[in-house]
Image (cartoon, rainbow, N blue to C red; front, side, top):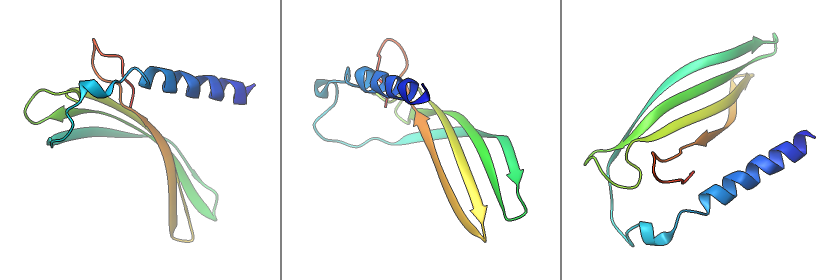
Length: 106
């Protein structure tokens, strides 16, 4: 059941992101962005052998010029990290939906 839910969620992400058309973006160029995050440790665990944590990040990405397709894009990330014998490992996922009226998910 969890596999079906995960597959459905992944399919939804692909379908929504497919709405982003190449015509919306210039063929070349550069932009400067600032991204601000707030980090919150949701859970931690110490097993005696190692430690782990789940951290949630929320924030915003802004184009320094104040316009463009990625301006005022919200950022929401969830990450799991583990430290065992001084070796850090982590993985996570980030969703960055653009502000309305666009319907892109990157």
